[in-house]
Length: 311
Image (cartoon, rainbow, N blue to C red; front, side):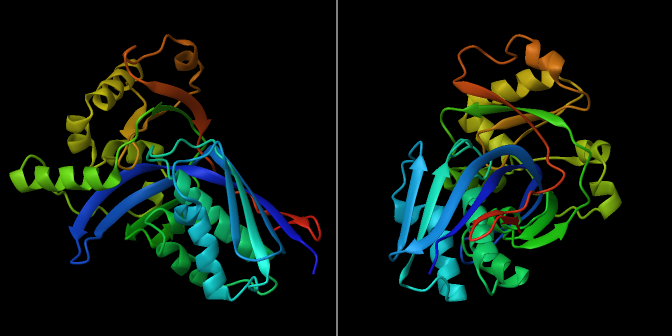
């Protein structure tokens, strides 16, 4: 059997709005969030070839054993659900990393979603979209959205329930990515402690209709991230950068993404003035600025062998 070969971009996400709702007895939290894909991506090269098992390489390397990498786990979960590729075929995954790890940008989840999309595109009998999202939901709260072909969506539950949103107009953004990320479990624990003390109230769900969610001005008015207060208390450096960006770009939407540590600013006008300005955060902060833009569509998987066709 000939080798199958596909390439796909694993686009990062930001959370325009993130609310942490009820905690289940299992320990998982119900969430509600507005996901938005951005033009920062890892590159995934996937081949189904002779051999057996799953082989994964990552450049630069990440400090996670291959078998625990979300991309590896996604391939294993797909094979178990689809019973494809056969056990005498090897799934080879090569990841070129551009999304910082532990940054709240969904880098590992994006890789997992891209692997699921690539395998399904190569499969002669592809799984239905609903089945693919069910597999994705077993891997993490961000993975279903990052497996979908939507640029923006409202998600709730554990992130597996998605309502596709109309694409928002393209906007430029500046990401402040930190050398040290934020442990998600620690962020949840800090939020629980804040709520137990009454330092922050749980505001509950906010369901808006699709036209409202398709408008940047409306989103800017209600956007929040429940993790910000507790995480800022743990990481004054993140708070300092958030304040600096808010001060230097008062009309921008400035939020922390996910449980941190990345802080983003989305600009209503081209951000060239900010890009050319002196760094707006404290010199002591260990961060890297990244310029990107919001996506309005998700490019198809590129199938390179046996034939070249997008899917």
